[in-house]
Image (cartoon, rainbow, N blue to C red):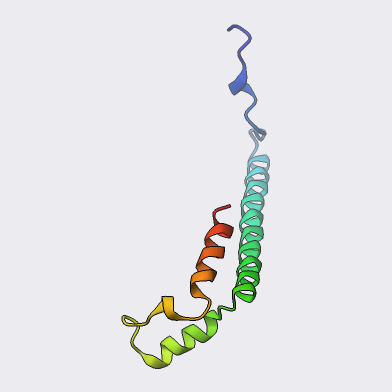
Length: 95
């Protein structure tokens, strides 16, 4: 137990200088922001691919909902390709 030092090296710790702390925080911010951008691009491309495979057209559905004006009684499950789109997208978005 005397050689237990797991908590001693848990990542990079900046020096105790203002510039070093700010640059370290900015590097961490870029990493988190970059991860979010990449995830968003993957989800958008995946959604487009799933829509093209299933034949579901979300833009046409939104336009139809907008023109009908009755959002509460709109029947999503009766739209062509919606159930297949939901099945594929739920499998894609789980990972």
